[in-house]
Length: 314
Image 1 (cartoon, helix red, strand yellow):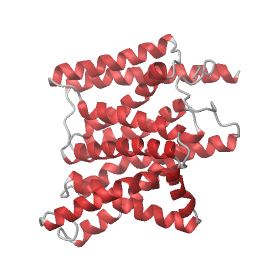
Image 2 (spheres, rainbow, N blue to C red):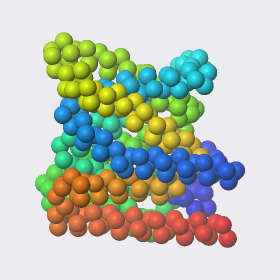
Image 3 (cartoon, helix red, strand yellow):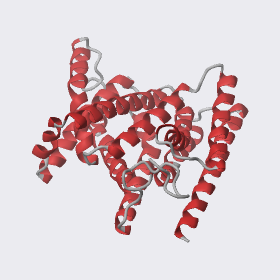
Image 4 (cartoon, rainbow, N blue to C red):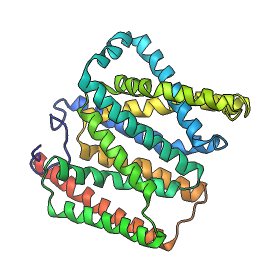
């Protein structure tokens, strides 16, 4: 798609921006709520740290679907939601987004359980710049010089961390790329946030339940065996998982990808602070150099996008 004048570099929707200002405000509220929620989500996953990441993922899927079915039933939208499975294009899109969100969830849970939240936060710092790069590569959007410099700086930061660690920061890269593709597909998909997440969790549900039944037959399922408080927390994975994803999908449908990129800084900022201050993860000089390059890239990108928005308003 062609670039929308000098404003957002990654406007990926068929309509560049919400026409109704009220929709724009609603989108901003949805987006900010989602990213703030995700910023503090590591506290929840630390609380259930005795549970293996795969079991946490299975419970996220299972209880999210239960929560979503209740919401849809209260709204009288169960039949219309599942009727979307008749649309082959919707099913294909939801199958892709299902795989992406499952990978994203599992890697994020694993990173917290194994004290790699600093690297996970790096992934979500990189994600807005991945959106910019995707806009240029897949949608043929032209990047202004500051935007190209920002993407280059971020690449240098990742390269530095790769050299210093002896391997690529795979957690950060998987989280950034999977969530960027997920956001793009959900922006272009027909189902709303609530309906789309219901279809995604429905596709994952048989695998999740089957895996938990197998684990229980082996006597290795934490649910029901690690104390009532852990079981209750695992049940709470439904609303804890579903609500921010619904808010995110509703926000991304109403806002430019660039605006979502601004709001997204909330999430990794709080995750990073929790990792270093609350969880005591190391943040070395090498980390500072790599993160510094990426933060500088984000600052340059933010300044250039804000300048473009002011010019467009004028």
